Image 1 (cartoon, rainbow, N blue to C red):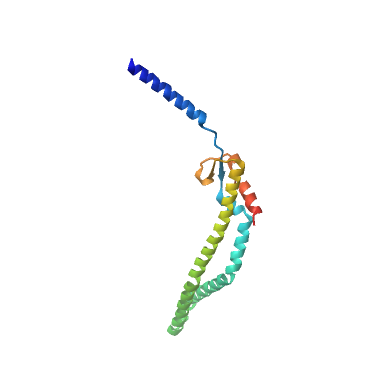
Image 2 (cartoon, rainbow, N blue to C red):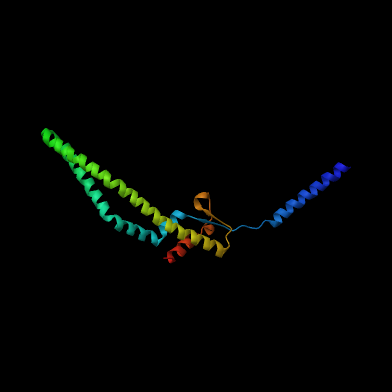
Length: 172
């Protein structure tokens, strides 16, 4: 008898807990953002690209000129190498080695500086995007915002990327 009462009480408690859990659960509002499309859709992205291009324009031109000179000398050696005497070949090869060394001294720091500046500007832009997402989530009552890359399927009405683009586009 005692075992039956304990079992009945346990079943009633378990059923009560399950009903209380479903009654306490609320519907969550979930949104999704596609950060890549947001970044590519922002006017600030074009401005940043133009700024970086202008900032590094001279250094890029120097590296490109050096690349052309190296390619020209390589082609010249391949084309005219058979008719050149040993001294001419050595002179051309020495010139090419000098150009290659100069290229390495210019290209690597340029690449590192460009990537660093690009990262700095991207981080500033990502800060604006994050603030816009937070603002939209607070204003519209979203409980959870996910990256679209984390979702396998999303209905278009859950995608707030366009709203984020609109809000960040207004920011300066």
